[in-house]
Image 1 (cartoon, one colour):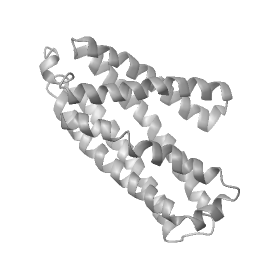
Image 2 (image 1 turned 90 degrees about the horizontal axis):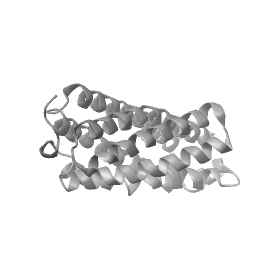
Image 3 (image 1 turned 120 degrees about the vertical axis):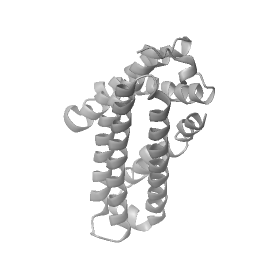
Length: 209
């Protein structure tokens, strides 16, 4: 149940930290000056990043505890992948702190690095989502198992989004990635609800491995 609450709680800070604040900065006429004139946004961004990291650490542990009895290998893989995500997120916190302490006259450079490393952890997270999808499909014996297929579809969306950012830079793949990410967003919300309602716990999972 706690895992479900944490899962759903990510809905609140995530859009602000990963979409809204970066968009506000990049849409400014002079991003550097905008940052310097609105440093409170960096403080808010830093707070949201730290909050998300705390939630991710707790969630990684709870998911490991939940699925370990049914599949030791996959649950440990999912845990390691999510903790790698946390590690990359911590690097992003450092970039924001460097902006705040004024370690340069080009703060947008640190924002660019923050965005790039967001896609780095997104790459790792795509495999975490894939593993969660496999666990759901393999062990959940109710209709909730179909969330697993949506999670797998969403993991492909994450990968497309990452490769489009670093390599492809294609409007077509941006549209495809965004469409698939809608599915993973719905699946993540569904996963949170399933955990909240105890529909994805070992009680509803086939424990024979």
